[in-house]
Image (cartoon, helix red, strand yellow):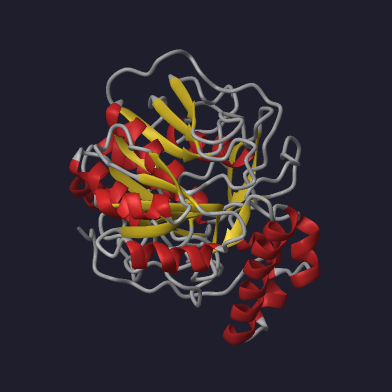
Amino acid sequence: MKFARPWIVAGLLLTAPGVQAQLLPGPGNALGQVGGVVPGVLDRVEGTLDQAGLDRLSPARLADRLSAARAARIGDLLRRHADSVELDDRREPARRGVILLTGAEARSIEALRSAGYGVEDAAVEGLDMSVTRLTVPKGRSLPRALKQVRSIAPEAQASADNLYFPSGPSIGMTAAALAGSGPVKGKAAGLIDGGVARHPALSGPVAQQGFARGAPRASAHGTAVASLISGTGSVRGAAPGAPLLVADVYGDDPAGGGAFAIARALGWMAARGASVVTVSLVGPDNPLLAGAIRLAREKGVTVVAAVGNDGPAAPPAYPASYAEVIAVTGIDGRGRTLPEAGRARHVDFAAPGADMNAARPYGGKGKVRGTSFAAPLVAGRLFATGSVNALRAEAKRGSGPPVICGECRNID
């Protein structure tokens, strides 16, 4: 279901390196890059621009710069990790040589096996979702394989294992200790992202599970997002002390953040009582992910997702664009929509996404920017209030989407 009538985000990009949401430079910011792009690549593509410089650019020029930055991010990932990542038939990044199949009949599975495809049953626990994971024959491109699979199994839905990027500069893996205090019981808020570091502000129960190679591992992005949900003390979240279930879908895998990993994370959370799940990740439409979100919703899990930071001219972001998902955009300290905010097929709420602080992996807090950091504020308040209607009732109304938690900035 849609939670609000469609609303189109408008505005301009603020800083070139913030094509995804930005953890601004400061002590404790992680240096590792997984699922992102090294800063130098974006600097070469766009240069470093301030607000005044961007305000003088036309919307078309800004859209070009955002598009170029996104292409650079994906191109860099492909160059560095060609053995793990390739483009699908829509030229979207995906795990190399993997096709996800749902709804295939037994005879089609046997025909695919005869055609040289590796076949693995890969059910998504917690969602009662059956998935067949195909391994593409060596030497066959993903687009060619998708075409063949759809021909052999026309009754099924076949898709690549598309990759979803944090609406932050990168996952930024760190050597910081993982947050955790034993099992989380009862009602909890969920977070699908990188792992979460131990931090004084995260004093509530935290349980973490990995859904990628090397996971869970602490990340700058996941730690910041977690603090904005349930932080206490130096970084106060929207639902202070709320128990957290954290699914790390990145680990140290260059092809982390895939649709299958996110689906498995949703199943894990549904089975463990998460009522609200934050996904500050963006990517393309994917039938497996869409199905997982529908099934999670049927089990009482509400997904809150960021619209991303590729700008209003970019294609609609997913999972935010799914009808069952609450889509969130970001605003600055003056209540203006972030210029770099992306768009979705519906935008339900806005929350602070700039002029604010969040937790750093090695302690303390630092500035963050992007729709990544607006989504957890909405998710936290939804968890605290218990219903979308209650969330709407506390929202402040204006010319754009209703604003949640406008004071949640942790500036002092």
